[in-house]
Length: 371
Image (cartoon, rainbow, N blue to C red; front, top):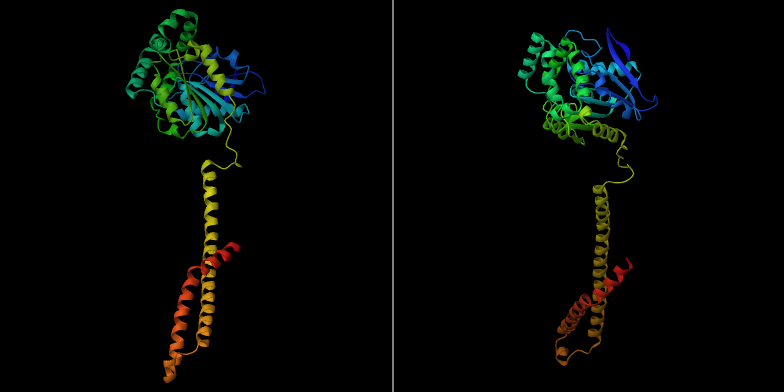
């Protein structure tokens, strides 16, 4: 147990576990102190360098006049990490400690590795309920709430099975400074992070108690649903699930905090969409190259057809010129040329038509095959 000076205020801080192990900072609930985590230390200290502290207004830490804000409680945690020279740590908080964790994930995400938010909420009940409790504390003292708090924190069955644990937690509650308790209640009364937590991107485990009346299961499920990728574990316990279901709680936390990081997709491998698009692009590039080949074949066919038609026309004219003129044509010299031209023209037309239909096609195939 060590006192740490943060500004003008003193905080009670304990550091346990291997020096080179990853740091895990843990924060207590409203009305308790760092000893609420005693059942976690033996198991967790095998894996982590644990930093636990009495929250402002609780245990042996400073309890200045309130009200406090969630921002103030969050900055206390950061100041302790700074004083210890810790740049980044895992976080675990229950109830009020879980609310502080949400603030840190939103305002200092680079300082938090992974976070466990246990038996907590993004909004803690109505303002009227909190104001009534504040009135009771100021008028009758914190002891007036003790039994009602124990009934919310533990099931009746557990209270009967573990009277020593109940006596220890109840004694810590009754020793909590009334002013510090009331000041922290004001911070929870004014809390509403239901929309803001949708922006959290750190890895988060949400733990809920199946029989928790203080922060009902629906509150924890709402947090898990709002934070992308958050995991959810439900335990057979009431509010202080870390005490009532110690073994299951410790296992869930260790499994989560020591699990391998999710591998990110390698940059060298294309996504499915990119891989699907690539063949299409290649096909698109190939299409324009095929069109000029068809056009060249058509042009070559037409040229060949014209050449064949011209040759056929010349042959027809020559043949027609060599044939002797008819007898009647002798009387009319002017008609010789006309008569000779007509058969030649007809012959040329027939030959050109055939040349266009048959030879031109063959020529076109030969030409296109070479391209």
